[in-house]
Image 1 (cartoon, rainbow, N blue to C red):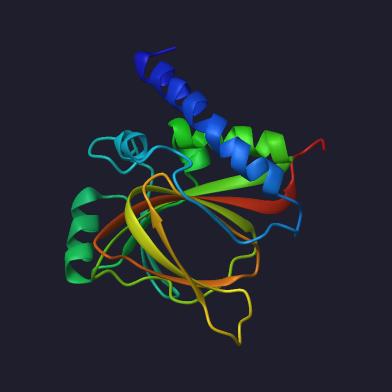
Image 2 (cartoon, helix red, strand yellow):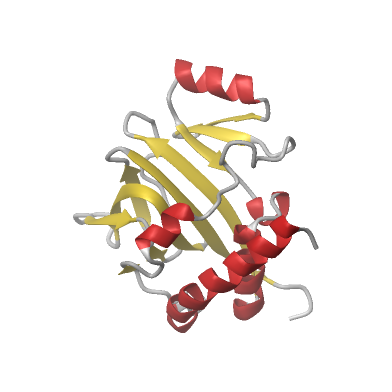
Length: 206
């Protein structure tokens, strides 16, 4: 085991304890409640943790997706990513990092999947104030959002015809979004969050 692998295993163990203590008791198949949990991870710890988007950390085969509504532009070349972003500022997403990254978020995905007996997919979202987003939408999975850096404003519609609930997530916060709850986001300045999607697909052999 390399020093880097050992460090990411240590981080995963440290982060898993508080995350599992809040999500596992609250998760039920198609029965999770919309819940905002502040400071699950201490803010100073959250902002210091390495992410796959950090300079030099992204693997060459890991694409970055530039998102605007239903438009998804995937690029792997750093120069192309920077050029397209400067021409059209959009939310940047690194998808499927549970399989395309060997860092601690991948290890958390595996532990969460093993605990809940469901396939878990992880993505990293980065955005700045001017960036376009996916817009109002719903997901076909339960989501565990872990705010890593900066802050994000979430508008969530438990009733699609009613008024949204507005939640501000800051570094270290966890937001549980049940499947089918419509939501939209905005970024006050800068935001980086991990989205763990708890799918309906059971693990093989369960």
